[in-house]
Amino acid sequence: MSGDALGPTPEGQLIRQVRDLSIPRLSIRAAAKRIGLSAEQWGYVERGYRPAGAGQPPRPFSPPAATLAKMAHALRITPERLESEGQRPDAAEILREILHHEVEAADAARAAETLTVAKSNRIQSPPMTDPAGSRPTGPGSTRSTSGASPWPPAASPTRPAPRCSPTPPTTRRRGTASAPGSTSATGYGSSRTSSAARRSAAAGRHRVDSTQLVRR
Image (cartoon, rainbow, N blue to C red):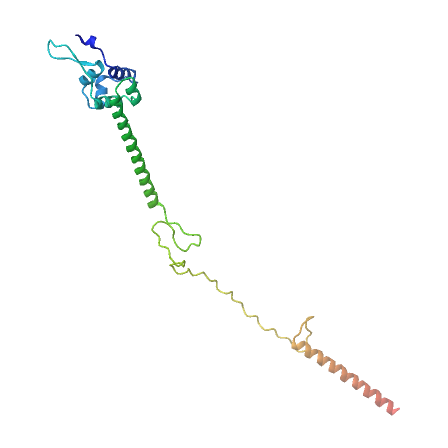
């Protein structure tokens, strides 16, 4: 029996078809290197048989489920396709587990990266102050349970009172007239003096007139 009479297996045909259609096209050696497999073993899977000893006919070759799952994963073959076209449900189940572990590892890596970025931002961000501006509210700040500020109130700046220059006293001469509406003592005294002088002058004139009448 010759190797051509044996022919490739369904999983071998699927592996070879996907490898030939890959862009860029992968050689058997390059594809086998991705999963740490020898090029000879990869070729056995695609051909579906392996040579025997001298004078012995080739024997059919079917790879283990774990090896076939790694080969399909290296070529990005889906578990559904490996199960339907390759007719290897056992290898398709292992391939599903491999993909599931990859998804879990990717999610864990993203979560760790997000946590690292959040911690870095928390450390670099300055502490915030509340609307009253009395105490910090950022990470690591201590707040008073009674609601009062733990720090003494800031002293408000005080402005010195403006200095007024003293007004020099005004002196008035006796008898000088005051401005309208003035209530100074000097103005009142001058008015009283003038009135008394006028009354005295009138009385003098009256006496003179009386004396003249008597003489007549």
